[in-house]
Image (cartoon, rainbow, N blue to C red; front, side, top):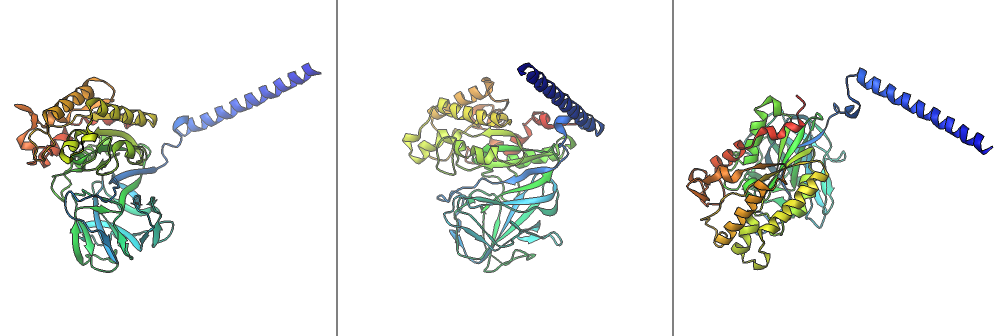
Length: 433
């Protein structure tokens, strides 16, 4: 009886296996008929890819310029430079460092005409969960509903946010290098040109814009400090090196499916907080969770060397090995999610005007870190920003033509040289041409 049962069970299992095989073959043949490989059957289905970002920060002592500490019954008109084009848009707000709900009266988007003015016919309302007025939970981001909005590449997008109540500044991005317009009292989100009470070079409660894009689209995340954030570049001119990289990509048909997301924070370090969460702490949020992220360029570490001396933080002195260990963590965490890692060498800083920032010992650390980046093979590729920016006659100093004047941050020409030194073939891995 037992043998009969086993033979019957085997026959049933064999029949089920054959039926499963036939079903699988039928599915494969159907996909082949449609011209799609089985593993890529949904590759034509669009998904969301970031086209602009700014890393949220808690308020810190102002470095660039004084900022408002609160808003009340005012409209913030904020301008952002996008990278990737799309026909549908989502806006991401952040109350990450707030301890109370963020009350928002209305949000609208449009294309910029000039200054605080928007282009006629481009204004669209943005809803969140179907609501035009809403709250953002303490410590949380909030992503909008999709908005039908033909966004061209490299656009100047205006995001207008009305804050009806007294709203302390809890979450912002300090170094916008872009003018934000703060209105007189009232909701002017739909105004062609709102009455302006003041301006500021920061972004408030706004952390991202995404577009619906084909599956082949992807984002390059640039993780760094003030040199990635664009310190000393021309305000409102979009001359940060990630902006120039986006322009290069959009000028080549082969790379127009790639976005560039700037996650630089001025003053940031890989291992200690002071200005913004440290890179190890924010990596999951800013890189791994970035919509469509496929690549990350890491250019961070010079503040690990210079800030302890400049700010009198002797207990936060690090070795070259400490910085390298932080890179290894970033590399490992990116690879777990399938991202390719590109390491940028640290640029020269001898002679910087910031007291205590440069020391010969700090220069020795920079040289050791750069030698590891170039020679270890642990990054998937190296982008040698140091070689581009340094003075050939004095390699520990920045080339005069690229120096903003503080001997630490590049000027517009320096940022352009950095972007133009990036080999676009590094991003062929996502190209299906």
